[in-house]
Amino acid sequence: MHSLLTLISNPAAPTLTDDIVSTYVARLDGVTAVSWLSEGVAVDIFFDGDLDKARRGLSPDLSGENFDFGFQQTNQRVKKLLVADMDSTIIQCECIDELADFVGMKEKVSAITEAAMQGHLDFEQALRERVALLANMDAGLLEEVYQARVKLMPGAVALIKTMNANGANTVLVSGGFTFFTSRVAAVTGFQVNRGNTLEIKDGKLTGHVLPPIVDSTTKLDSLNEFKNKAGLSDHEIMAIGDGANDIPMIRAAGLGIAYHAKPAAAKAANIALNHADLTALLYLQGYSDKDFTLS
Image (cartoon, rainbow, N blue to C red; front, side):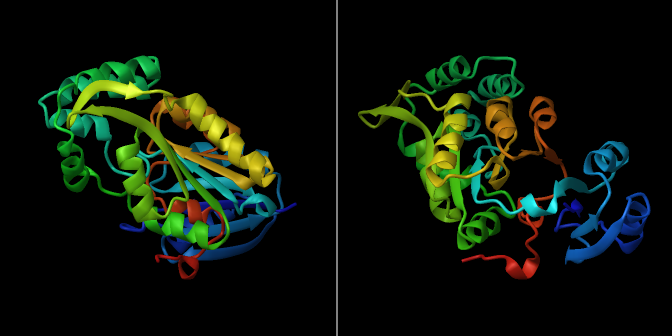
């Protein structure tokens, strides 16, 4: 069973060089091949040495580099299910914070969001508290926020469309709102999207969320639902998120990814990405640039 170390930098500012690769090749036992997936951006180093030993020995130094890394078994790298968080993972903002900005409440709401993502507040309680602050907001502002504030993370479209094209199922499960998950799924290609539903009456937000609440349990349940439906093994599943609400699904996936994440989520993950964009999830599966699908 062969082992693998993948090094991945940010495609917008590639940092990997042959010298860097050679440094880590020299510290691995039984290197059998080096394969560039994207010149200067992502490279696979295959080796026959003990995977856990290599991880323990190299992770402290790799963690200090200006690129990301992941250790895997080569025969378990391709995934058939991706379950993803949305806010600050697939998109670059927290939608509820941006909604609050339109009614002059961003500072207060953002503080609650941050505490919830760090795991310091109960998610449902924090969600209801924040949504209550949006009471009487004109529902038309939802579309305005989407158009003006919601931007995809770099690599999001390539990630989802490439996995779809290769037969994987892609599921977006957010503690945010269906108004946004449905639109983000439409532009990226997610096959399933789930989120919380804002109650609207007479064209205004009531300040309430309709049940059931989508929370960390929902995310984990969704992962297990699609895992069982397709008869998948754990190693065929990838989950990605950035906050405490994502930890159960990150731990349950064969490959749990923390993406520019809060410390608790990063600690729970198999791989923490702090430099790369979302195409890193494709490189980790062995896809090269020529394999990417954008339409």
